[in-house]
Amino acid sequence: MIRPKIIVCLGRIAAGRIIKSDIKITKEHGVWFEKGGIQMMAMLHPAAVLRDPRRKPDAFDDFLKLRDKINEICTHTYED
Image (cartoon, rainbow, N blue to C red):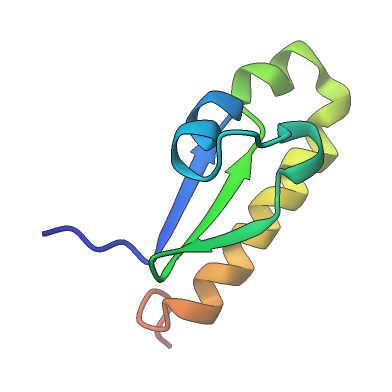
């Protein structure tokens, strides 16, 4: 019944279950994968960013990539 265009996994555990079991979150966060016509991306878990504030720029870049993908494939989201 639900057919999302985008799925975002927060952290390695979620990404390992949904995207691929051997995902390396520190290397593959922010990388888009496609499965069954659905775009998927792993992001750093918010708790990981809180524990290591040096990861904030990486997390911010992931959010920018998410914004760009939403603008690309969800044309009705930000109508003028």
